[in-house]
Amino acid sequence: MSAARSSGRAALGLLLVLTLCLPLRLHAQQTAKPVLHGKHWVAITGKPLAATAGAMVFQKGGNAVDAACAMLAATATMWDVLSWGGETQALLYNPRTGKVVGINALGVAPSGATVDFFKSKGMQYPPEFGPLAAVTPGTPGGLMVMLAEYGKLSLAEVLAPAIQMAEEGYPIDAQTVRSLEKNKKRIQEWRYSREVLLPHAGEAREAPRPGEVFRQPELAATLKKLVAAEKAALAKGKSRKEAIQAAYDRFYKGDIAQELVRAVREEGGLFTLEDLARWKVHLEEPVKTSYKGIEVYKLTTWVQGPVLLQALNLLENVDLKSMGYNSSRYIHALYQAMNLAFADRDFYYGDPYFPPAEPVRGLLSKDYAKERVKRIDWEKNDPSAGPGDPYPFQGESNPFLPLLEQWNRQAPEKKVADNARAQLDFERTFYAGTTSVQAADAEGWVVSITPSGGWIPAVIAGRTGVGLSQRMQSFVLDPAEGPFNVLEPGKRPRATLTPSLALKDGKPFLSFAVQGGDSQDQNLLQFFLNVVEFGMNVQEAAEAANLNSFQMRASFGKHESKPGKVLLSEDVPPWTRKELKRMGYELSFEERTSGPINAIGFDREHGTLWGGSSHHGEDYGIAW
Image (cartoon, helix red, strand yellow):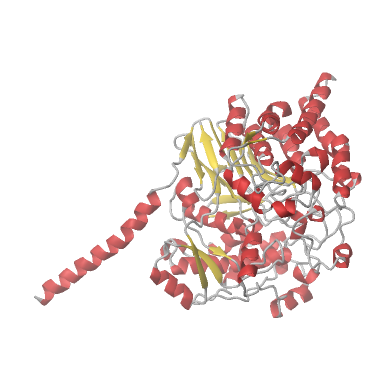
């Protein structure tokens, strides 16, 4: 009887384990959106209409670069969540060379933007909004250089959908309308912004209505000027590339630049014609690491991209798969690895075109990661985890050792105030929005873009229709808060924008990006691990529940942090919550925590493309 009872208990225990595991596995296989399958191309971005613009250009015979540029133009025209005066960061795979190329089209601080200037106004950081928040426009230049160097079609063909949307109008979406109405008081401060963005001035609701046809004739005129410059150059016998350069010059050195600078200075900004004329797009070699035979590429330290590579190097020393997806041990391992990697980001990242050189080789050293991972306490969170010293791992001495020792001894107090308003402001700035663009084609071109800047509420620069960036706030004014990212005229702020590409056996394996400020590389890290460690396809991985840490410094607003706070999915079970609280975490929950991830996977066995687009936002994809 005792043996039978013992056998029954064992069977019941096994049934209970299977019952608990089965829903998790079934949940992993069911997605809110279907995976996209394409033989010829895939186009994915932040809004359905913008994805359609990419599809239109593919159908014209364009390659993935052409389609990506069309989607970039459409999203900038739709204010999703950027405008034409923002910045563009891209990685692309060139099948002709087998190389990954980086596109650096982040604007710079204008001539008058100095530490003393902002301190004289009583500011701890450059402002979040207004003309003084703007770096020089980067997206027009990034789009045109990328198109000229790697596309097939003309600028006129690629901009056609955006011009039609601006001139004839398009049905504006509810998400953008809500943002306009919510921010209308600030929009009203700027003459040209209120004229464009609040068409029902004086009414109770001044923003457009959802579905209303929203027109931007002045932006359409600006885009038409670019096309006219290209057309005139072609008529003079110039090459395709030279004709696109003529359009570039008209924006940054011609009549568009003149109106842009005039209007910015009228609003109280600092731009000069020399600032725009001196700025240029950089074609770069990205940084990379390997994780279990997969090469992962990111843009370098002018964005936060290398932080994902550092986290992978740390986690390569840990058996993640045996911990189980989103178990307490897995969540703790990722949180601690991100603590260490993001602490390095906050101290060491900055514009590589300004001295001193960032210690990239040391930061990405596998030996450095092995040394850093020893610091992890596997039983509790470490709220004081600070930056390490990568210089010995590249055979050099740290020029900022006193600042590093000061940081790790007593980091500048940047914790969020303990009140509801401060918490809401912190989370708003922490997730400061953008969008992403993913495109791939049968020829082998792959493009991953994370553009941003000029989100609502933005200053519109006069009659150009161009909304200005707000990226200046990502600088610091005190070297103690990050010696590589201190504001200087002509310098790029260290941005959060971080497209990703991964190769396996020298061929594209994954192209992925996400919006969401300081959460971006957190979500992309988990997306990558979902595919590589847990065998998810791109749609499953894009929708899967993520954790978000708030322990790193925010790159926006007051640059605050919330050590130990973690955002989790509501699906996290009680026993995992209990264990994490025991380990010192402050838990918060939301229904969806994936972030609006967009991704393309490459099926080498069948020669097809798989597209994934998270159900977190309004992101959308089309494949053929």
